Structures are given as structure tokens and as C-alpha cells.
Image (cartoon, rainbow, N blue to C red; front, side):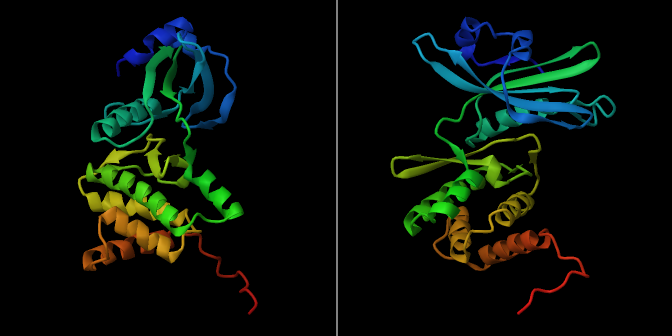
Length: 269
């Protein structure tokens, strides 16, 4: 896959002397997330800031990885960096109009037998993950019904647009869904596209992603789930087809919840 650099950020990268692979790879920046060791290598994320010509600075996230690969039919033994797949998926999401991260720089290199790749993206300004929002709401109380409906509608529209283009995220957890409040409206976007795949049938993408989300949103009420499904399907009330989809999603979510062992004692009362 060819190197990529966003034209709007080229001058900024040059000004900060990080317009090349070696400069970004050697950039000293604290880990935003500790590197994970898997797939035969490692992958980690740092947050960095670069000076702007007009003054001030802009934030970016830099993901670097070494020998962190996935196998493909074309590369069954050596594999390709997982960031290659993520970069391709970023392009697919952008083409489909699905809000996600904006790539700034991408490149891969083989250096002394080690496969390295890096991806620089714009920081999501004023966005917070759904998991962070839910943690705050559990402490301070859930938003009023009208605002909850707007939040659920923003999430539903994001996933509906994704599935309309046969894109299955495959890791639709609250930590990968981000929300931002603009005046009276809520905006949503999705990140971590490493495992996204295109599906022939939209229904399989729906069930996989929606069941994952509902399984990891245990504090949503029955009414919240109903409002989400109505917004996702663009309906005022659930019809027979919609009820069938909702049952499949919730059944799949329940099936994947951890089951108590047979020998576990029952709760008293």
C-alpha cells in the first residue's frame, strides 16, 4: 500500500519536521495506551501535538506497530500490517459518509527484517467515548428522556449508515463509539476499524454489530432499546419485520453473555 499524507497537513508536518516515516517513528511521545503484545509483534498509540503556522497547536494520535500482522490469501505466511487494513477501511468509511477518524499520514516499511507501520490521525475534538459517557451518567444520573432519545438517534443513524453500505465493524463496543454534543444536537462517530469487513448481506452485519452494542450497554432500559431500534429502522412503531430483527439481535446478545457454571450456588431468595 502506498504512503499517504493529507495535503491540508503537509506544511504543518514539514514545519514540525515529522513529514517522513523515520521522523514519526522516532518521535518521542508518551503512550496514550500501553502497547499490546500480540500477533507476533506489538502495537501502541501516542498522543502528540504539532505547532500551527497561525499559532497554537493541533492534537493528533499516532499509532505505531512492529510485526503486528494479519494473514491474507495473498500473504498467508508473512502477512501484512494490521494498519494496512485499518487505513483501507478508513477510506471505505469516508467514501460511505460514515463519520470516523481522519487520516493524516500512513506508511509502512520493512527494516532489518521487521515490518513496521504507522498511522497518524486527527484528534477527535470534544468527542468522548460512549463508555465514558455511560460511566458519568451512572454517577450523576441519566439525561432526561428527550436528550436520551437524541443520543440514541445519533448512534442509530451512524450504525444504519454503516450497515447500509454493507460495512460490518465487528468490534462495536461502547469504547469505539464516540459522541459529541453540539448546541442542542449530538454527533456520533466510530473508531478502531481494524476488523471491519464488507458483507454480502446487511442483515448479518446488523445482527453482529447491534448484538455486540446491546450486550455491552447493560444500563440501557427496555425503553431505551426500543427507541434505539425505532431510530435505527426509521420507524415510528415496530412492525413485524422490525420486531423480528430486534428479537434476533437481543437473542444473540443474550446468548453471548457469560453463563454461570453448573456448580455455582444460586442466590438466596
